[in-house]
View 1 (cartoon, rainbow, N blue to C red):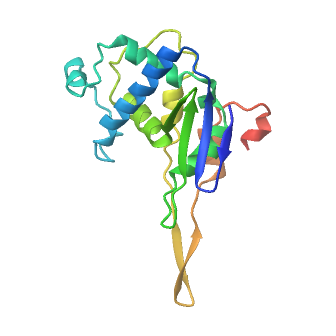
View 2 (view 1 turned 135 degrees about the vertical axis):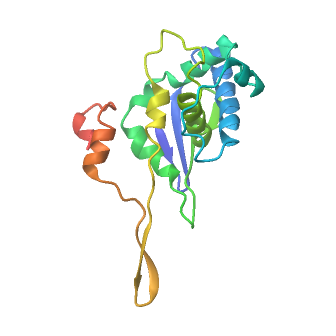
View 3 (view 1 turned 45 degrees about the vertical axis):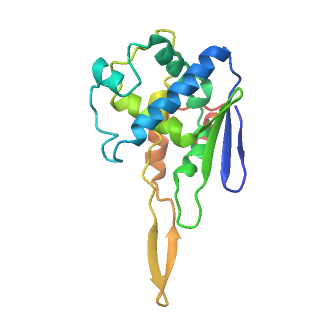
Amino acid sequence: LIAIQASDLVTAWLGSADDSETTALGVDQVQKVARVAEALDEDELPQSEDISITESEELAISFKDVARWHAFSKFFDRPWFQRIWVVQEILPAQDQAATRKIEAQVVVGPYVLSWDDVKLAAAWSWYKGEKRPKPEDVKFDGISLTVDMRLRWFSRFGFMCGRPYSVGRFRFRTLGLLKQFRNRLATDPKDKV
């Protein structure tokens, strides 16, 4: 459960491929769902909508394919998703500054996925995939924890001596962040602060 940060890349290790067939299927399903989510307008994705089985088949991510959706759930059923440091390592990758974009990727076993695909797949399944098959033995709700990290990023600009300057990229209230992420796990609770 580590994250490595290069100057413009964050790589998070989710763990080994416990069952290589299930892991491969889960990664593939995350990518397929991400492509479906990517086709939606940015404002359309977070609108709750029950997709029917027929609609899921038309989107080529059929809810009838229980094995794929169980593998999808298993992908998000990793302890990594519930750790607090995930927020501090991965969340800044959502910043798309004009000068550079911090890329993020997750690695599970031999597979590499972009963080954008992971968060798009989680959001789609959270808002649109209520009727998808869900296994009963899921321990961690990585889907809702991923959706919970969709924070708005702010940039404030001011003028000094007639020239624009950046006041800061991130503007969050500490109490709000503590409340939002209080259910995340840390070895030492003080690490949450």
